[in-house]
Image (cartoon, rainbow, N blue to C red; front, side, top):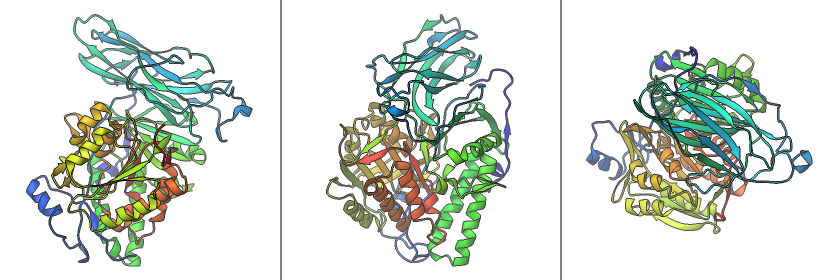
Length: 581
């Protein structure tokens, strides 16, 4: 592990208000060097099979990306709530029995001069909303005693004049009080402000605002922005870690569960943590390629080395305050969600450990799910049909994988066919595909981007730009499973993120599953079969289905593929083969 990961994160204390055992299997994916051109890619992925390091079977490729991010949090006050260790309440538990939609409303000036105080007002109301960009959540009765929500604010380039984490109570049949957040303008430019609502550890929705700061500018009120919250349900036991990267390179972590903790601001002493993460991925890629040929002793040694990597990652990449808070809540946490745009930490590899606790990797202990900002919270994933992507040059096992998955999905899921051309794939996405979109192919990855070589050219995250802009997938909110190497990260592109997961989610997908490093094809197929079986046949929610799939392939001769999958979505979301109503 590189020095960047072996040195702990040092706290950045704000001074006043802060600125914002098997035969060798083929490997899926290949890592491209920056010097390689498109012809090299074609010859690697589209020509005849290459021999794997073990000499058996065709070789395959890999997939991936890295990322970019958002703002900084100001100081906040720690506030605790009563423990809720039982399932969601029923009317007999003190609910009025009514379910009604709620709306997160935020108001902020859209223009002001530098060094001006600009108030931000936030409220939860019952008024109807006809604006686009709403984030729907399921209906849920509000307790008669009220539901206590946490509101957090991130304000890039503005100065906080007080706490940016506050709480409000929502009562049945009433609008909430109005919260006031004090902000002061600083440098000229266009600045982004985001207001997020949480119910205990469950993320409900967000409102995004902008303010233009110009010399001599007259303060001008901005329009009311809102996000629809049809319900304010929380998932008992869900904890959310909200992560931001500030403009100065520091990171903000905030743990939200049954207790609301203040943000913790930290800076890496060893430089960019992404460099150390890349070294870890390189080791895991090598381990996956050797796993089928490893002796029992080698497999045991790899498992121990993986544990040490995970423990080191936990101790160096997670602030000590967050570690303490996690252990305080650990016996009440049933799922763990990471909310943020920055995949600088492979969260699935974390191995929480102290002298009193050793429960294994976080991802074998709890469902670990990621969420990105601007992503809808979906409670039911509709899978009325399934389309598969398998271009020429895909792994030898891809055809078998698709056949077995078709059989597993059954006749209740319409077969939308196998796609081999980029044009047909982009048309399907831009028309708004309903159901499952499953990729079983190679993903060529380099530091400058990621691409799938289709029969008529490369399919890249930029080919999703129209779908992102029009939110074409939102009406049906499909599930996208990118069962290819390194498909879950991001690549910074013109100050924005350019990755498969982020772009599919921003286009309106309900969930995305991808890998963080090259994986073995046989392990990848087993993970997919176990996941779909748990999600559809066993009726498990997304988080639990992914946890069961990890455990199903965990003991394959030291193969680390079970830790490679990143799951994006709502951990409590369930699946149905019926279409959206």
